[in-house]
Image: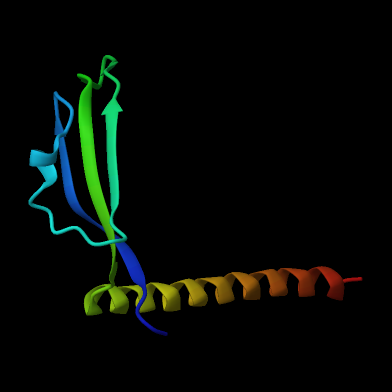
Length: 101
């Protein structure tokens, strides 16, 4: 397996007024960066609420770190082992069902 590209947030902010160039001009943009600017509607409930605000985020695809790569490999091995165990359990159930006929 090889390292893959993953999405990384390089900038995130929120404020009460629209974003302008001065808010993001110091970011070292790359050609494929994704810039998301949006208005978040106010929300009110008993347990959670927030005022309306402007939100900004810039994401970039970067190569995963060695640590992230190793974690992904371990997760893939764990998932493969789990899937094999489930298939074996299903096999044993089917074997028992059809041997009795």
